[in-house]
Image (tube, rainbow, N blue to C red; front, top):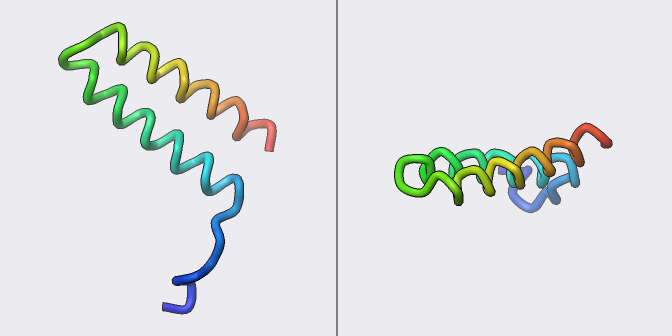
Length: 53
């Protein structure tokens, strides 16, 4: 309840973005392999940014 208005840290934002991209990649892997690979690449780029932090 008290964390309702808490701002997310940059790390938390990147982690959420990474998770979302992985889920999209998995969903797309069933229909469009090329789009899935593109989402996986984007997720890996976000992971590299996370490692820099």
